[in-house]
Amino acid sequence: MNDVVLFDEISTASGHRLGVATLNAEKALNALNGDMIRLLDARLSIWAQDDGIAAVLLRGAGDKAFCAGGDVRALRDALVSDPEQQWPNPQAEAFFSAEYTLDYRIHTYAKPILLWGSGIVMGGGLGLMAGASHRVATASTRIAMPEISIGLYPDVAGSWFLQRMPARAGLFLGLTGAPLNARDALLCNLADHILPQDGWPQLLVRLAAAGWHADSAANHGQLTALLGELEAGNGDALADSNVSRCLPLIHQLMNKGSLAAVDQALRHTAFEDAWLAAAARSYAAGSPSSAAVTWEIFRRARHLSLAEALRMELVLSLNFCAAPDFREGVRALLVDKDRNPQWSRPTLAAVDQPWVAQHFRSPWREQDHPLAALH
Image (tube, rainbow, N blue to C red):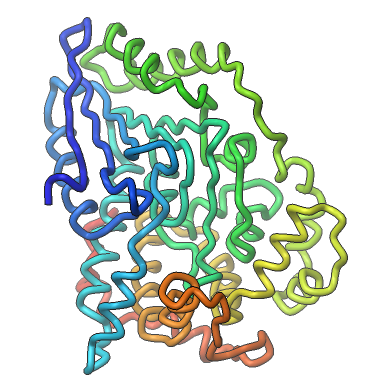
């Protein structure tokens, strides 16, 4: 089991050490499973208490992906094989509780966490990346929250970090699953630096030679400065930002006052921009229930803290697991791969407010919530 995450420690010139964690499921594009989540969370807890560890580095094995998301196929298998259809499903509760606890730990970690977000970063992988203090993208970075395509919603703190994007771009990304490149990631506050695609070895050399301190705040500043120096020498050709080019239109599309009006615009506008057109098609093919709940999440989560958002998301995720669209979406995309999901409510007009509200119904009293300890 330990092989699914590789742990290492690098000695530095100052006598401090750097903790390195590598998601080690290259063939599965480093998709997160329960063992990976628990191992990573436990080691981060140990390193947080170790005065000799100055900073933590997170990366994925191979060149294709940091992490392509959570292992939703295994989760679907667990749901389908549950004859009693328990609510909340115990395996889903265990998985999401552990995942969101890990996300919260990364967001609130006192020591610097450098995340090498090269290649594919989707879903649960973005949950890890969004929370890291120093997020590195490269020319190959491809970020997305495509949950609407599998009958889910943007979780892993998406209800919190998508709110913190300019001009309603987060709502657009949540509804469409549109992919982001490295420049997009900077603009959307999902990355802090763009380094050369092959820059990991040089980065390790510079990190090992740096003079680390006992003070975490000083280490944060030093790491930012070091990454800035490496970024300045980045000669890789980078694609232009799609979000920057389309931001005024994104705001116009998302600022129509109702999801019904947004739905009409996305379905019936002849977009000249290829990226926008693809996003609109992705929305149109996605789960209408997911779209309606995502819209409601943005209304409810506007003033929530990170901990409150994650508690809300655990409730949402367990209710999505109990509803039919998640199982059907994963079947169509990842199991049978026919890409022809039969959504339980095939149009937005068929999604009524009681159905949306049901997704926010908690199975616990507030004090009994599995994430009650987050603050």
